[in-house]
Length: 476
Image (tube, rainbow, N blue to C red; front, side, top):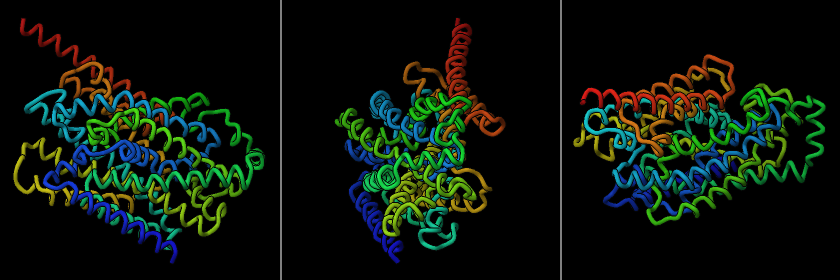
């Protein structure tokens, strides 16, 4: 009953924030739905960025990786904070100003406007929107799967029923408030996430003791306490450093992350946003300790993704377990609502713009909200038929491949402007290389998307130069 009460109170709060944000949008309702009327202050901007970036992967996926592969994950996890900070300080301001100049309200629209106009630009916007639908849809399915696993034990229901309850809740507060509601609810949820991470650190460092934990891991296998490989990120422990560029690209190139930069107030200092990103990010880096605890005391779990639920059942008391589970649920919902918003926007706004439709039912807020509902239901159905797979790997498949696809047209275009032909080529190259390396080889999880980014950049620059040269020769 306590768990149901906690869920009910938090759900009421989130729905209330959503309805209030809808009222706050006033006569700029669509702008509020897409980019929160460019109204986010430093703390809310940092909170929604961190809450989304440090989502279910850091509370379920990362402890699962630590359980399966060892303590290297505790070191690897720390690279997300400096990566997000670098993206905030050195990329966000450029993107925010350029998008404001162009009038861009989504990342696909920004990509199209910076590379072409007319028919070619619409094609580019439509293709980027379709890729977002496919790849972020995969990531959304993984998030709902993780939510189902967590909620089933917490509420005493089946994983499918737990996933359905939370999916309906996320649909509810996302469809009414849009990005403004997503950001405000994230700001509330990230505080609970930080508290949950700190409680995990207290249990391991104070109640158990690091020495005892390391001793138990050494009895099972010394590799867990002192890994000699970089698995699952590569062959060498140095492969963990690849997470720094990977996480930077995550924040800068993924539309559901970078769209937050478009929503920040024009007069807000990015340094102030960066300070909050650093503080919140560092406090969220303790969660892999739960996976090491589960490995030390329960080494024979059926799947690695049960590491965090096992910690909650045995590492803390019932009351604290209920509260931390709610905070973990916050983390998962913060990403699920962002994904629903971005994917539904690709459907309701970007594809409609690509088709040249600027009036009628498809331009109404009712249509935008209907797309959120459809995306959420489709993701739930996809989760129900998902085969057994590690949640973190599925997230990397969707996110990493999308990141590689958009690397050329987002990051490279910041420093060197290509043309629409180069943009099409870079999207195809990044998508193909990353998807092949993740699905068809045993290369490390991080290396595949990074090689895809290199292929995307090479094609973006090479094809743009070649087509410009051909056009110049034809003109002369």
